[in-house]
Amino acid sequence: MKFTFIIDPLSQLDPGHDTSVALMEAALALNHEVWVTQANELSVMNGKAWATVRQTQLKPVQLVEGRWVAESNWYRVGDRHFLPLEEMDVLFMRTDPPVTVPYIYATYILDLINPEKTLVINSPGGLRTANEKMYALQFQSVIPETIVSQDKEVIREFIEKKKAGVIKPLGGKAGEGILFLQAGDRNFNSLIEISTKRGMEPVMVQTYLPEATLGDKRVILLDGEPIGALNRIPTGNEFRGNMAVGGRVAQVDITSRDREIAEAIAPKLRSDGLYFVGIDVIGGYLTEVNVTSPTGIREIDLLNNTNLAKQVIESITQS
View (spheres, helix red, strand yellow):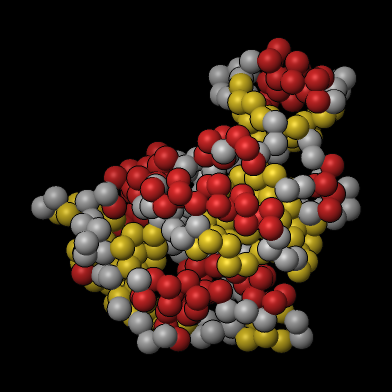
């Protein structure tokens, strides 16, 4: 089969960390073709989605002293070809957030692919629907108390009632811009003005979960089913557990509560075409649903001696 990955430039990826590289390696190991392109290389010709693609070969990472290590020249790309994307069997849309206007335009182009010819993961419509913060609000039974507002007084009332809260930009990624705020903080007005761009942009405010000090669990879902998990534990004075801000990763089990959360959201994920998803769980509550380029596979494999990318590719090819 032919797999195409819409990703950021290969030169900017970390082969020992990026899930996209793990998926490409797995596809190649299973004797599939791998092609790469970028969102800014998509076009529409005669009502169909086209792209400038390059066939790609990778040198797989190796496990050395407890970490993934790549060779300096770990990828090789072939000549450029301008092709209709329906010539491919599977297309992974894995451009990293933030979800900008050009990103949305790219999903409109991908809408023009006939799903009976090419499977797009995740669905372009699903990517537009599932803001990674707001999407979780549909599942009130499994999320912490949450509001979304740009009104300073509404936010103040919530924080004072809950004693402490976490403020999240709706378009943020990798923990960027997330703030911990306590009732009575003398910086309250300034922090809200900065976060909401002086009341012009809403933010998510969640009650602070003390269990966050024990870790922010990432659970990988494949067609709504949990297949792996890792814990991201804050270090030093940092309250965020995201790997991008220095969170320490640790082995963790998929619990019955994790499965309960997955069961609650799986029907909606499937109906929206969200096949490969990462959910964040703190203290048994769903806090985010990551659909653009969920990561964590490399770390889970390292901690558990698994090969989740192979499981993903095999699931796609056998369905």
